[in-house]
Length: 536
Image 1 (cartoon, helix red, strand yellow):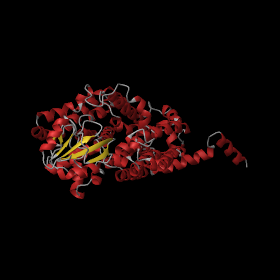
Image 2: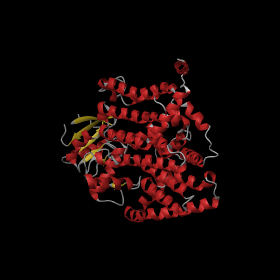
Image 3: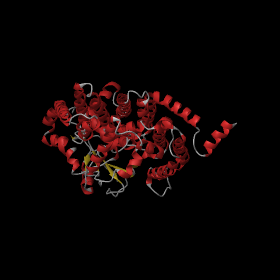
């Protein structure tokens, strides 16, 4: 009876009795020992469901699949192309890998969209391996790090998309792993050079922003001489440049000097001073960090335990802190900013959080439910789940409001989970959002297929009322000829009148022909009209 009263008193105080706390911690250790496999399973399920539930999303996924398709359709393996023009914004590795998958499976959106999540799985596994390397005395360190990383909703969201940042994240983790290994294996710097080359082919010289500070600062987290760190870094960068030149030299020859300048400077280093697009102020990342680090960072207890960690005594913690803070600082200084630019720093944060006791047996603060509810409400409104007169997206969604509320409530209910089991929160929220796409208006409105099916028979005679076309329909329609962007409406009308079997695509909320379109379809948040030759 005394034990029952003791436990009841602790429950009234909102605390676990000591015996229950020890049992919870023991269960947490048991989960963490298998954490890598659990994390891989959770992320893998969410990623596959997302591919099945979501359409190919504009404008990034549609653009990258179109570039990969044009590479295959026209055999331009060295120099990527988009809509018939050289595409210098990104290196070719992602497009090569998509075509490698297609060579086995045949061309399909599903197969292509598996490439990005595959790197997400590899990043989780590599982070777990790095944690075991840093803290070999802690048998569950790798499992906890994997669970923390897979528990970040931002990681589950971005790593499930067809983008470059998860590839870059894997390159960064592998590069850090090589730096850690150089303490006992002097030639491990060759692995660093391979990671640099891999990252450069994945997203360009931006890999240097992530890895150079860690490589040059080994005296701070490992205590070796600065000369040793500088010489190793110089050798690694030189060898990486040699590896990348195997592609870059022939690509520069066939793509021309403008392509070479864009790949080496304009689309990477040039963004440091000139934002091109996504120009944001210096402080832009700071208010978004709670979103990037949700749900783990919403626990006050976790932060208190992180503050008490022995960063001065633990080289692994010093490494992870330098890794995460240098990325935040340098990308804040760079003019062009997007939240997913910080994705390669999430493994570093996962390593730090994995060392905190709250991940082993504690829980998340229930106070986070209030901002969580507000955030979910705003997100639902942004996706069109609100009053029908708010946006065009909201019109067809009333039948989905109840299941949407239930799914999001289930995701939010994860706040009651303890310790490593709280890793279900991030995948749960992303899974709920994916199911909203499957059963709600976004799955229809963001889908390029309806317009693609109409324009596909007109391949070679398709124009769009815009100065810029980003390949939104090229892959979905399997187009082999470029779409003609026409900025002036009168020029578009003249082209339509003088081109047989032609079709013109225009946004109805912009400049478009006065006559009624042959079809009108909502896409990417806007109504689109389609006019064919001879339309009255």
